[in-house]
Amino acid sequence: MKSQSRRRFIRNGSIFLSGTLISPYLLNSCKSVNDRINFGFIGVGPRGLALLNEFIKSYEVHLLAVCDPFSDRRDKLAKKVDEINARKYEKENYKSCRAYSDYKELLADLEIDAVVIATPDHWHVKIAIEAAMAGKHIYLEKPMGLSFEQGQILRKAVHESGVIFQYGTQQRSDHKFRLACQLVRNEKMGKLEKIDAWCPGGKDAFAKFNPEPVPDGFDYDMWLGPAPVKPYTFHRCQGDPLSKGSYYIYDYAIGFIGGWGAHPLDIAQWGNNADKTSPVKYSGSASFFEPDNLFDTICSWDINCTYANEVEMRFMSDDKALPVIKKYRKFHDHGTTFFCEDGWVSVDRGGIYASDPRLLDIEFDENDLRLYESNNHFNGFIRCVREGKESICPVEAALRSDTISHLCNVMIRSEVSVLEWDPEKEEIINPIAEMETLMKRAMREPYVIKTT
Ligand SMILES: NC(=O)c1ccc[n+]([C@@H]2O[C@H](COP(=O)([O-])OP(=O)(O)OC[C@H]3O[C@@H](n4cnc5c(N)ncnc54)[C@H](O)[C@@H]3O)[C@@H](O)[C@H]2O)c1
View (cartoon, rainbow, N blue to C red):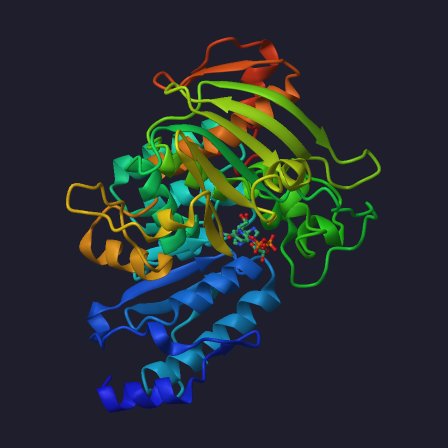
C-alpha cells in the first residue's frame, strides 16, 4: 500500500469490531503481500476478539481465518474482517477471511503461518500441540492447560517443532512491570527476600444450574471437546467474568488461581530470575464455591510458596490480600510486590510504587542487567515470528509459572499441609496417591492429546 493510501486508512481511523475503535498508532511500515504473516484466530469470544483488535492493527498481519463453535460469532467476524481488509489493502470486495467451525481445518490450512488461541482453558494445550505439529507459530492465552502434565507435553511439542511460542502474559510487555523486575534483578534495594502476589479470586461469581436447549448454530460437542459431557446451560459456556463457567468450572479451568494468578505469578517469576524453576515448598489454605453454585473451583486462597533461593512468596486471592496489602500501599485487586533488604517495589496495571519513590527514577548503567524489552506484546510476537527470535514469554517460562498454580491446586485438593517440589526432576517429593491423578487430566475421546 502506498504511503498516501496508508495515511488515508489511518486518518479514517475506521476499523471497528464490536464497537471497539482500533486506533492506528501501531500500524507498521508497508509490506508487500508476500511479506505478510497469515494469522488464524481459534476461539473468538471476548478475549479472542480483543486480541484480534490488537493484531489487525499491524500491516504485517494478514488475518486469514477465524474459528469458533458459535456460528454467529465466526461468520459475523469473518465478514467484518473482510471489510477491514478491503480498506486496509484498498481492494474492493476483498474476501479472504475463512470461517471454520473445526480448528483442525484451520490448522490444515497451509497458508496460515501463526495462530492465536483464545479458547477456554480446557482446549488450550490440545490445540496448541496440534498447531506446533502443523508448524504454526503460537500465541497462546494463559493459563496453559488444566494440569501440570498437559503443560509439560506442550513444552516438548513446542521445543521439538521449533515454532515461536508466546504466552498471553501481556504484563511483561508493559514498562512498569519490566522496571520493577529490573530494579529487583539488579538488587537496587539489596537482596530479594519476600514477594506478595495477588489477584481476583472470583469469590462472588455465581450461577444456577438450569439445563437449557443448546442454541441453534452452536456446536456444543466441539465446545466441550476433551471435557466430560454435561447438560448445556448458558453460564457453562457464556457469561461475563462474574458468571462464566469457562473461568470457574473445574472441567474447563482450575479457577482464577491459575486463570488470573498467571499474571502476578509470571511477574514474580521474572523478578526472582525463576523462569527456569518454580518454588520448592507450598503450604496454606483455600476455599471453594458453595455447593449450590454451578461453579466449583477454588475461589479464595492464601498460600506460602518457598523458592530454593529462600525467597518466600505469599500468593493470595484479592479478599485475603486486602488487609495485607493495604498496610503498605493503596489496594488494587491484583499486583506483585518485591520486598528486598533495603525497601520494596510493587507493581500492578495501574501503577508502580516503592518504599522510596526515588527508586523509580534510577538510571540503569552499562553494568546493569537489562531485561528483555518488548513495549507491545502483539508487535513483539510479530517481530519474533518474522525474525525467528525467542519471545518475551516462551513456553519454558509459561510452564514454570503455571506450575505454581497447579501445585497450589494439588496441595489444597489433596488436603496435605505441605507439598514439596523438585523443580529439576519436576516431581513431587512427598506424593500421596491423590496427587498423581491431580497432576493429570482425563480427556474425553476422541479429544485426547496425541503427539504423533
Ligand atoms: N491475557 C489476559 O489478560 C486474558 C483476559 C481474559 C481472558 N483470557 C484468557 O483467554 C481465554 C478466552 O477467554 P474468554 O473470556 O474469551 O472466554 P470465553 O469462554 O468467553 O470465550 C472462548 C471462545 O472460544 C470458543 N471455543 C470453545 N471451544 C473452541 C474450539 N474447540 N475451537 C475454537 N473455539 C472454541 C468459545 O465458543 C468462545 O467463543 C481464556 O483462556 C482466558 O483465561 C486472558
